[in-house]
Amino acid sequence: MDRGDVGPRGSRPVVVRVPVEPVEAAREADALDAVARAGDVVVRGPLFGVAAQSRADGPRWRVVLEVTSGCPQQARDGLNSRLWFHAKDEARDRAERRELLAAVARLESERVDELLVSGTRYRVVRAEEYAASGPGGIEAPRPTDPEPLVPDWDRAAQEPGIDDALVMDPDAPVTPTQAFEQLALRDLCYTGGRFPEEVRADSRRALDTHPDVLVMPPTFGVVERTGDGWRPVSGPHATPHAARRSLDFALTWMWPRLRGYISEDADPRTDARTWTAAGGGGPADVRAAKLAAYAGAADTLRVGRANRLDFQDVVYQIVRTRRLLRWGPDGPEGPRPSDVNSQEPTRIHLALDEDGRVLPDD
Image 1 (tube, rainbow, N blue to C red):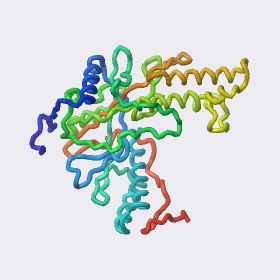
Image 2: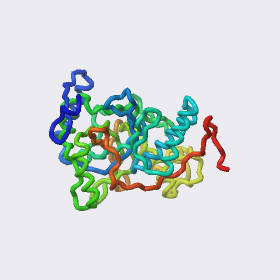
Image 3: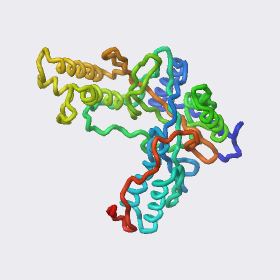
Image 4: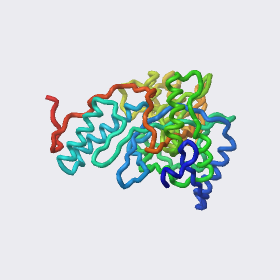
């Protein structure tokens, strides 16, 4: 498709395909049920990552650093590390290493959102995180969302990566519910008075500069109910099980340490479960009772695919979140002028020489 074949405001037509493979058809039916249940879209704010485009990619971009960072500078720092390690371990020759290290030097001192290195374009990209909300609150995982056949609760287990090998293709055919979601969200922008005017102005401008949207794969997290809504407890995960495991870890390991029930210098293998199983304290020991309660709450997460936990007057819920990435004639949207950076560019790694040897600071 060329850019002459576009609709109003320069947006691409949406190509719809009918899912016929049984698993995909089940996902589509699941998505249709979710649309019927949803009442509102809850927007949390922007997330950032890095995408790359080589000469062979055409209009497609590949995600090389997952789009989960809370500010643009975190994504720039991730690209800094990626290029530094490429220079150290993978550069073919001195010329390529010099080019990579020149890019690293810029990232150490400038807020650079796009670089051309060794024939590949790297861009810091921006996505909007949102979730569907209905009468029961924020949408929970769907029955067809990815779950392991045998749940692994080992804290050392490697969880699936977010956006692994994700190729973003603005012209790829989509299913009917995906098309509905993309079209429904094309005009999404910040309008509320709680947003500063510069944020609202950038949001309105993006409707024209990046009129298309791509809906990225779902992520899953833990939220807790507050007096006026829901508050995130964990960052995004690739599967509902990974989100449950993060809540299990918080209940058994992190929160007992933060709240003084387990000493911060205790053996890292000690948690509420091992303490309770070892018979720590006694029946009247307050700490033992607290840790037994934490372990019992975490155990309920391991029964079936629990998506809700009521513990100590707090409701925790596993929720399904989405990310909307805006797309323009030159590809995915980058950071906006009004996006906030929580840190300045800085040097992250030691210097390298042209042969990839690490140089000491002195």
